[in-house]
Image 1 (tube, helix red, strand yellow):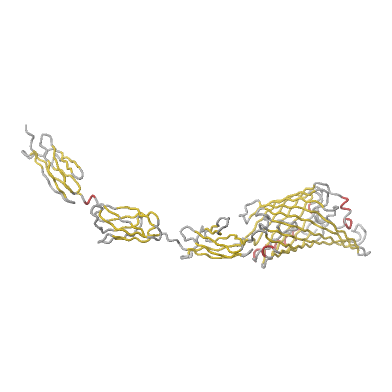
Image 2: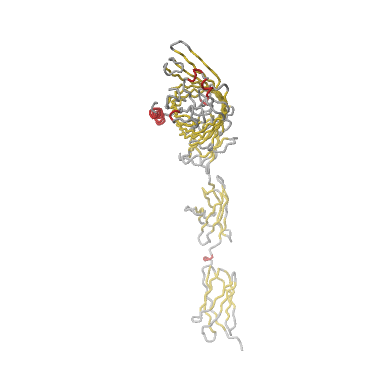
Length: 568
């Protein structure tokens, strides 16, 4: 048996080296079953939605036998070939369907006697369904599953297919895919792994095996009982729409008492070329047996072509960067939406980058971001192609201006003072003669304005500001109460003796204020606003006098009161 380690190491090492050194558009295509993958290893991801394809694969293997090895006692060369025809369709991102059939043949060429024998027959027909289990937005790591059923078309002469007994073959498997993708969301490097089971509803017919062309001389390339299916492989994109792949795959007969190495197993390097959109795909591969000689021929050549197309609108890629038109800095969380599309918008990341898929043709893009003016852009999206654009967005004007005047609340006279937007440090002075002021770059919305005039109460007033517009806002200020206060003071004495009296003094005018006389000094003080007040003094046993007092701002008039005794 050839060294498994040797054959696994060479192709997989080549794949890893290519993945680190080259880039190019990936070449995707169907397997002989019709489902997307490499050759026998399937990808978890279905084909693009709306993709319809017809695929034909052919294979050929050959082996030499000496007279001692051949059951016919003669030296001979035996070859066998087969073909697979499949039709596949992907209705959605999550489902892929395939119908396939096979034909096979075995050819015996006896060197010594010049005889030859050929037998060709139908193999089987099968139906496959593959589904993606992870969300379609998860493009790097994907998990999928598939199920299939197959039935024979002839007398059991299958050599390369899954059919070699009556009844149905039913199976399923789990598919895993990891893909490294570029900005265009194209898989530059991918790893696939499959594991599954195939069950047969009928037992293997030994008579059918003996009746094969060449009387079963050539080793079968498939096991006969229920099977464990496995496979893993890499594929890497190389320039000019080519892909290189290498896979390891096999089947293990769970019903036969055989060593693992006696079951078919092969390492398969291969290449694939695909035109844009998968209209034409060509695949070529070479199977290298890594199991025992009794399990399969030492080598097999496999090649296939696919013709495909899309029955639904084809998409292309759009990607780019959104930047601030003034600073050049990236704009994060900007929304990019295609007008009249049912798909929601995509958002730019912290670097301002975005990528999305857009239906081919002309598209109107709508860009919006908080604090920026919305804009539209018309782009042409090529089918299966990509457009890379840089967009700039201008910050939206979020400021307006305010004009008004400052006046006295009582007289209406213009006031000289200053005004600012509350919370800022910049003050603007009003005109001394007219009291008018003008504020620029006031944030839109309800702006709190702070007014400050000497000897007047500070005022906080709200103005409704519209971006790019001029708002009018007049205010009236009340004088500061501390600037309007005066003090009435004096002494209260006994008119006969001149002694200090205990008395109460009340001033009535704009307001009413009352105070008591200091018994030790006979002094009283009352602080009131400017105006005219009636001041009365009351003391027990004395006549209560009342005098009018006029007081101006900051004035302190003195009024002494000498009280006379009440008559007895």
